[in-house]
Image (tube, rainbow, N blue to C red; front, side):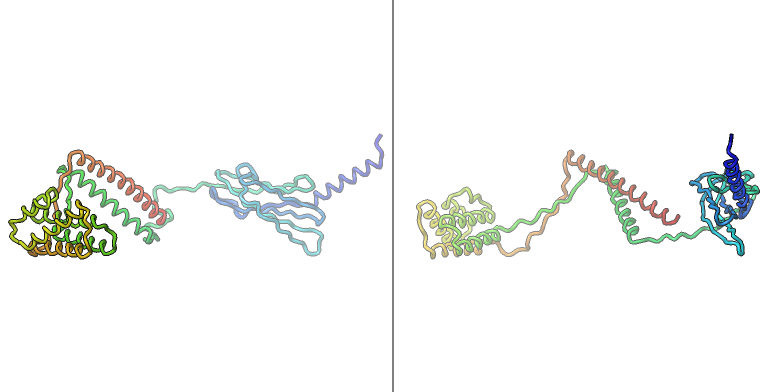
Length: 358
């Protein structure tokens, strides 16, 4: 049997709860009741209650639906208003909602009080419509009819890349012209002028003089280098193979020159050199200097008259068949590489320009 006191307490609690719920008034309204698909509208939920009642507005996750077909875009925030001369307050919460299906929706938002839900007293209607398209009158659509001016500006970087692209295209053009030409590939070879024999001999004698003054050459080496310079000069000047001839044979070959003084000095140089090289003769400093001066006099006396200096010779050379194929392969490879680089650079420039315009 139930205790009457307990029954009384339970009845009081139930009555107080019902009284608290009856004191909470929930209302809802929309900024507008007619929107297009994808447009957003504000849903205002207002709850009026006493200060002692704790009210919670539901928080929806992104794309959660407050009603079938109506999604919550933003949960917004709650504002609190106090009523003058009364122990009651008004809480206003604003949701941002939208819909992507055309239909007529009925919304009845709610609040949470003590773990229970209290819905709005009245339903709120929301009409979602599609965008009507008049295909017969396209000119009525919004948007500019003329050409929109872009804000494209040629920067130094783009100008440099464009110039590089022109160079690559020029290289491709050269490769194509070369490959389309069926004539053999030729190349120009510049042959430098030969140094006159007397200038070469004087240069070697001057070097030998410097080495002798610095004591950098022995007596035997000194005469070997001096006679080698004279033999090279005689071979180039008179056209005889003086390098392979003995001293006497050289003198006999030069008798036709008719310069007895020059031949006598040359004979003295060769005789002293033979003594040093073969008889281990040690010449004095005066003898070495005298031999050097005699060599200079011989060259200056027998050198040809001053003429115009020879000029470089330019020859057109045709490479062999194997080289011809190799050269064409080089043109093919170079043209292919330049084409790939040009294509990549052109695509990059187009993307840069399009991104700048749009």
